Picture 1 (spheres, rainbow, N blue to C red):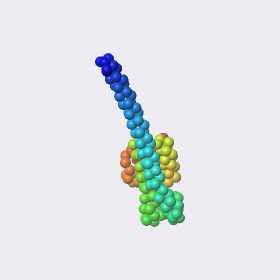
Picture 2: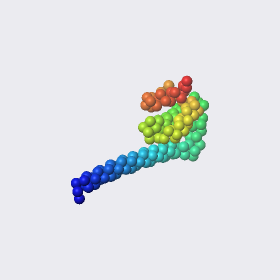
Picture 3: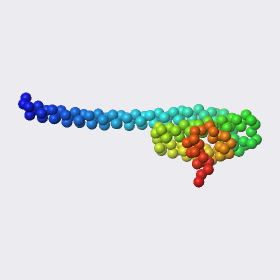
Picture 4: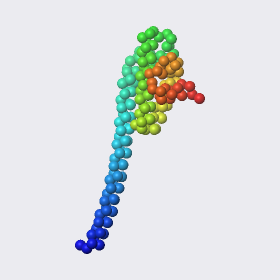
Length: 157
């Protein structure tokens, strides 16, 4: 093979190498995006798995359900143990939402899914009168960023 023929062959091989490199980069990029989707889906599933036992327990235990439904309305008439139980239920559900908040801000929860949870959190804060408990010490259990998010919902405007 002549020098010119060898030069052409080397040029073709160099071009092919560049094409294979670009294809590899695109393939890796697609794999990373797919892995990120799977990670988000796994985190979403874990959020459901975490909340399910709590909600099932509320559904199965009438006294606990009554406490959950009426706790804020009857708080002043509750004895010390039931007040403690009710406050723990509120804290647990807020911890759950704090977890969702941080996973969303770390890119592990989809925007549309997070918006649904945010609506639920806003309704929870309203329905349970979280503002009544928040400044009395409930907020101390949560990180600053989540405290600020809750405070925007407790005191809108």
